[in-house]
Amino acid sequence: MFSQKAFRQERKVQLSHYQMVGHQQSDDILQGDLILPGIDRITVELSVPKLMVYEFRQDDPKKCTSARLRKFRLVRSLPSLKRIPPSSVVLNPTSSRTLSHEDRELVQRDGLVALDCSWNLSEDIFNRNIPGISRRLPILLAGNPTNYGIAGRLSTAEALAAALILTGFQQPASAILSLFKWGETFLSLNQDPLEKYAAAKSPELSGLEEDFFGSHRG
Image 1 (spheres, one colour):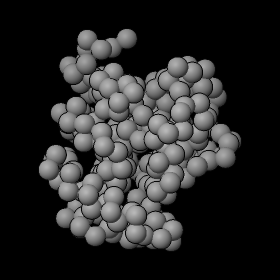
Image 2 (cartoon, helix red, strand yellow):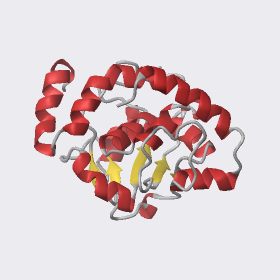
Image 3 (cartoon, helix red, strand yellow):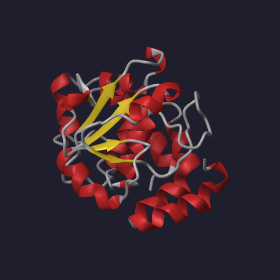
Image 4 (cartoon, helix red, strand yellow):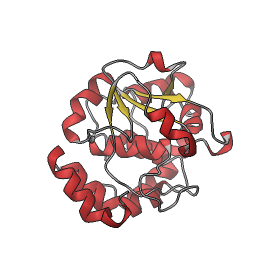
């Protein structure tokens, strides 16, 4: 799991380097073909998952975390919901199945999709017939300024990073969170639950959620 000191060092290294790399190098980073300077201490995954986002463009563009991820070419923007790969894992808080490390192979092979929308308008969106294999994240606290401390109200960047941590892809998770000043806050708020969730089998997750966030449920 991430240490706070290591995260701060990671953020300085990655922010400075992302500003220097060209588009081709950025694509190489996303595909896992290029290792950023200063992070070779991290165990390199065999294959970095494809990260995709469909943006409903309902929020303030200046606060849109997926736009920042897109700017740094860490995610690929999908032009329509129909372009979601049918075998990819789609993060959906209404799903009856909770994401766990048992989904690692699916994520690695077919990619991970986030739906970027306003939480105020999310009920209709997440109840649509969306392609892909839906999974919800176990309960975590938001570290972003808009929904700070609210259970489940994660930004798109937080959701993708959490999903990557839970499925064993810490390098791209660190790359995502390093782009935000509150990335360390998200990790600090959720360090214990993330560690427990990442080590748990799927049937154990509900009990862990109750242990950590029983007062926040519902």
